[in-house]
Image 1 (tube, rainbow, N blue to C red):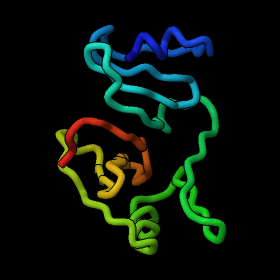
Image 2: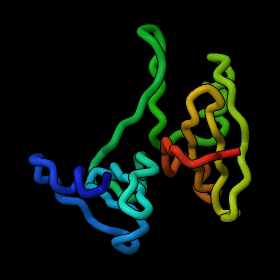
Image 3: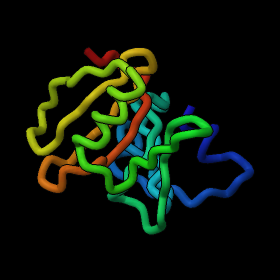
Length: 128
């Protein structure tokens, strides 16, 4: 529940975007969680809302891939090289390309004008 996170003893400084019923809470490092009616339904990283250098990486001990500032084709090449199954998903906003990792329901959101990863999110909402 949203109230559990906001009232935790960590005293994190969350900034609300939206309304108290539906929206997102952001930390200054770009971490965010989305909620609806006091239920958390998404967590993720928003690189565009970060005031610090946030790094997200994947791989193994031989090959580590940092997603920050990577172009769309570099991310898709990485996923394909490691045979990570993904699927493009329809978005109402044509400014973004969204892909979903099929086995984890993690969504990568790319800004098509910059051609780079904008957000990485995990949601409990149904995503086709």
